[in-house]
Length: 316
Image 1 (cartoon, rainbow, N blue to C red):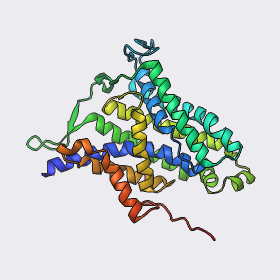
Image 2 (cartoon, rainbow, N blue to C red):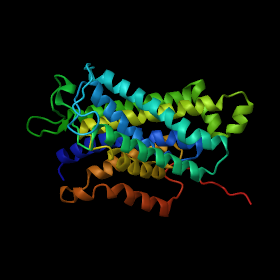
Image 3 (tube, rainbow, N blue to C red):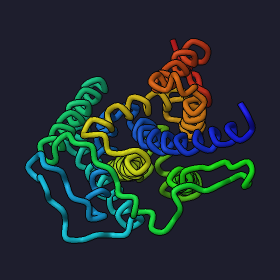
Image 4 (cartoon, one colour):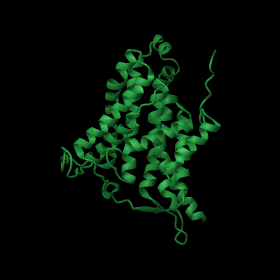
């Protein structure tokens, strides 16, 4: 492999790794607070992509109740991305109210909550299919304005072209990771969230409103999922209502690889899987999705707590 192709593959890997990191952070936030995997996160990811698609003025296809519908506005892509993510965050809050809070109030087994979130995910996906069909939707090229399709990171004699959309995805991912890291480590809200994640009962006795913080956590999780969904949809396409579910399985591999509930670990694992996938030879690209789960399998054998996770000491 020459240096040009190597650099190109690294840049592509960092871009997709950034999306994996954002998506996995949504899982990680909820798990760090409730110690439960939110399987509805993949469906919220899908909703975020559809919301942005609608807000930029695109029209739905010929199937579903909303066939040929287009909203009478056409927002700039950055604004649509932000609003789409906010709407996805609000949907995630609704999921918390419907699937998590009632069971949490009854002190139900965490397994029941997990199954409940899985049921909500299936319901959301079927609702999307009922409304807009199962067609593939592609973001129009004009959303990038006058930006070139690719940027050359090499020279005229040894070009290293990288798609502009990949660069935008990587830049947005880095901004999100930095802002979230500051929120968690540098603000009172972040300190309260960490207190709840350590011991919700003690945090409540100290005057922290745990219920409000759980809602905020779900909103942030959905917001991140919405951003990731739009970025993936922009890079490839919205491959139907189920594309978030498949992506969600890979997100699970990322958070387990990084260490359950560990934010830096989720970011690191996202980039590792993104880079590993980018180096899959072209003739084996159909098996690219197996990379994440192969790495997960090896990690579970070698270091079950993940890259940056802490081993849990069982008291007897």
